[in-house]
Image (tube, rainbow, N blue to C red):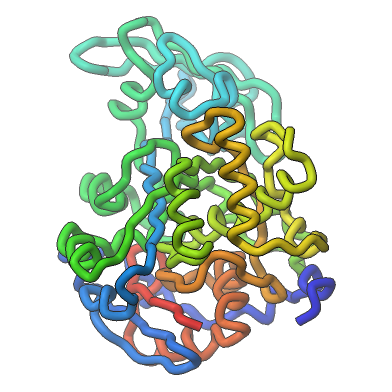
Length: 407
């Protein structure tokens, strides 16, 4: 497919029948006992997830997204009795996740609001118990930004952080397609065993299959493991409404990559195995950040933001190692231990992968940008994979089974 044709892909060509009973509503009791679909050079077979290390070569490097899902849904009841849901998407003041979680007394977030028509004005208040203290949490609605709103949060105790507030009364936002309430068990099962950095409103679900035993088996096989952070936004569930993907605006997601990870990527020849589409998007975005730095070595971290269509409009050719070296040089010039920036990249048929050579991923929704990403990786062969999964009782979506894709 010509790059110029990518924008004109019809999303209807990425539809398939997904009956509700094929969507896994809950995870398996043992994470690593899920089925593993193996796609290797066009051939499809199946195995157990515990066998994953067998499909990797000793000396390969595997990259995981260590983001942690936050309890991002807050509920308030108005004096009229109306229930308002405030869903925290990303911090605005301060606009850094770590700083926002550390705030005491006040912070502001960009939020989606449920039952918005019932909250025209005024401040919502709720008395809550946090760390054996009774405090009043207030939410004041600010300006509208697209489908979201600025919301100021305040509370009357400076010993309590916003992280404490969310931990005490926030609800974990499980995916809308599960069509069920969040349960206590989700607090554990909807996090990867290696999650560390708070900030996501959805789990990087390919990672949900990993257990300490599987990680140990990877180590024993000589697989190098590295982590990066991409905070998954609610936009990951945003359906493509336009007929052609040119009309779909990708959401911005925030990423953090350590200097050591860049060094390791270079040492591995600029090639790696990605766990999940979020790791894929981060790793491939790095290539384009290197391109930006090759043209503008003095760019600040915000200017490294990868725009949605940059991969299809960029004409500069660098090897993955050259591009990563530009990032490493930049980090050394500025004494940075980690690169903090963002990406809006869309990976769709016509995209040429630069860094990722194998992907571990779940089965995605019909007509989703994630399915486009998979199709680009397997050169349009996605239907063979999904037909096999549907015919062989694989479980779909976040709590479903997994696959390893080796083109």
